[in-house]
Amino acid sequence: MKLKAFKAAFPYTIPIFAGFWFLGLTYGIYMNVLGFSFVYPMMMSLVIFGGSLEFVAAQMLLSAFAPLQTLLVALLIQARHLFYGISMLDIYNNTGWKKYYLIYGMCDESFSINYTVQVPDGVDKGWFMFFVTLLNQLYWVTGSTIGGLLGSLITFNTQGLEFVMTALFVVIFLEQWLKEKQNYTALFGVLSAVVCRLIFGSSSFIIPTMVCILFLCTVFRKPIEHAGEKE
Image (cartoon, rainbow, N blue to C red):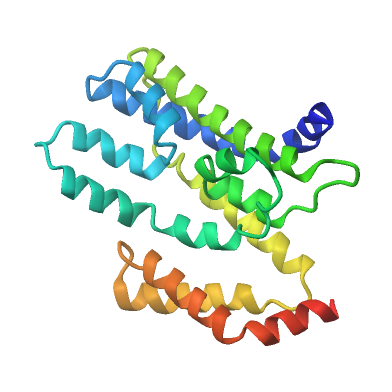
């Protein structure tokens, strides 16, 4: 059962591997440049497992001790996971002890796969999602660790590598758009993002966007469910 789930999950994580390894290497190199041992990016990747937050945390480690400010920044950066968690309540149900790791290890990429993928017939859904989450975290941890170890030896220009993950999400969005006949939720997301980007600016629009999406999906819940039943 476990091996079958692993074999089914692994192909879905290959694009994540490409992005996470490059970004993980970049993060490890960045930590090395700041003067940290490889142990720091390795442990932060294991414990925090939040790419953008880890980059910010690197600067916080060099700043004055400010626990309240650190807590608030961490909550703001990772607030989107509150919405992810609400979306996964039913999906993570009946997964046993694996549910705790699935909650702990959920990142943007694992959420995208576990929320949208159709688990192959004969494959245990809980183990499938577990291996998706575990593999994605291993990619990030190993990339960060290797970057920290080899940071002083790597001198190539890594500017622009962060676009790999943006491209990945564009592909996932297009795949879902083509698969679904009714695209209400996708349109809500695009509309909310555009409006909030214009109102709040590029640095502060993510949380308002998610609030708008949640509001619209709640208000139009019945039409969305009715459209889903027709499909």
